[in-house]
Image (cartoon, rainbow, N blue to C red):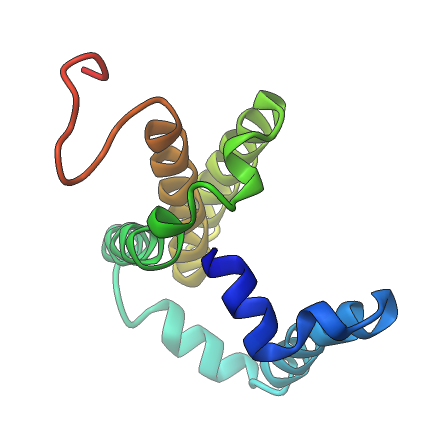
Length: 141
């Protein structure tokens, strides 16, 4: 129900395939272009602003926040809960590799991104198997 309301609010249901693709990829292109304008010195100062452990905690907190705000209410409309289990395996392997490699290279921002994605997938998996923040079931634990 929320998905239908959102689609009608932004007019997604009236768009053809190409318009939807442009609508979805537009922000990605804009953000990518914007990030490419950042100077290397700015990125370096951001990377060294916190320790990698602090970046990992910040990424984990962001992952929990993102999950609670955007994913929990959409469990019925979210395809990630019915996706092939290999998707989760690849997500865990990819983000684990990203976090370890970013930590080795001392890239704090990538540690943040990897931690956030990892936590989101852990929570999706837990939620898929019955975990609920309001009333966790004994069967889950």
